[in-house]
Amino acid sequence: MSWRRACCVVPGSVVVAACECPVDAAKGGGCPMEGGKYVAPMQYDVYGRAIDPRNKMPPPNQEPSPGQAMPLSTSRVASTIPKGGTQETWTYPSPQMFWNSLVRKGKADGATEADMDAVVAVHNNMNELTWRKILEWEQLREGPHEPRLSRFTGRPSELSVEARLKRCFGHPPPFDRHDWIVDRGGAERRYVIDYYSDESQADTDQVPKLHDVSAVKSILVDVRPALDSVDAAIDRFLRMPRLRAQGLASPPLPFFATTQMRAASTPDDDDDVVAAKINAACAKRFAALRDCGDDGKKCADAAIALQHCVATVVCPEEAAAFQRAAISDDKDQAEQAYAAMDAALARYAAAHQPN
Image (cartoon, rainbow, N blue to C red; front, side):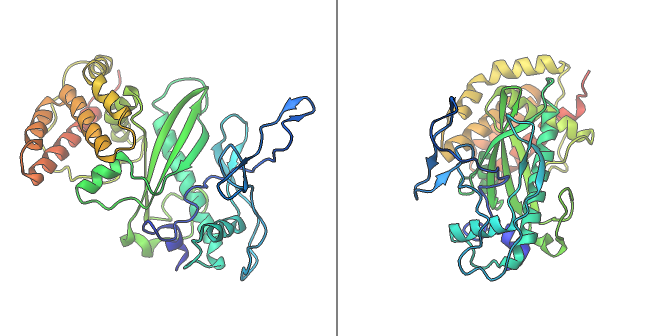
């Protein structure tokens, strides 16, 4: 298996360190009271191994694994991602730590120790790209505080709502998913990140430097705020398309073809009025999405309903067409109507520049 395929493969194969990027240096526990100060007790995983309570990971293991064929570097690279609650940045795992993680999880088959330098380079590069895309969204938030990554969770076996929607229309699922929690002066926002593989670009991949944006074309990163609030929905459906139209943010990943579609309706109301209308009209839709839990179909249906509700405010003709198509038995018609509504929302946002 090549270094690239060790980083970007279908679920169930060798997905490198899906749950441990970026990796923080663990600190030991011990007696709850040391020098009159409270020290958090040690926590343990299901195997009885001590773990860092901040990221639920074992302490960094820089020792060679049993049977390791060659020595690996223990050097770690500092990321440019600010760490929540500190003035530091997160630190990436070393090649030795990556190899040990693969061995520990039983995912070393098909990979070799010689792959690890390239694997770590791709891993670090993808995280830097993810953070760069998060900062684009953070432009939409106001306040004096710098965004910092507070914590993260790898969820490779769980499809996001958007990934489920795409799969319904024949798109392949992502090979990995992360949730990152970004803190800004105590105000947190959860970001959902899906990582997709484009095998048609595999032959063009190169081992990237930390901030290369085009060296690894076969991995596509889809970053957006979770629909945990109406404000996040307005960012996704209205404000971010405007930034993209101005060339101030990365374009979205391809979803539906949007050519040869008529222009969206464009109400004369300014953004604040439109946002207030969306808040009033879609509060129940937002609540349904927020409360859908782990029921994938229920969450997917709630996400479509919320998007349709926003569309009834800003592009009512496309919303009505989608509603008619949705209750028909024609799947192709429903898909086309959804694509038209999705494109109309994007065009509306692009056409309404800030005052």
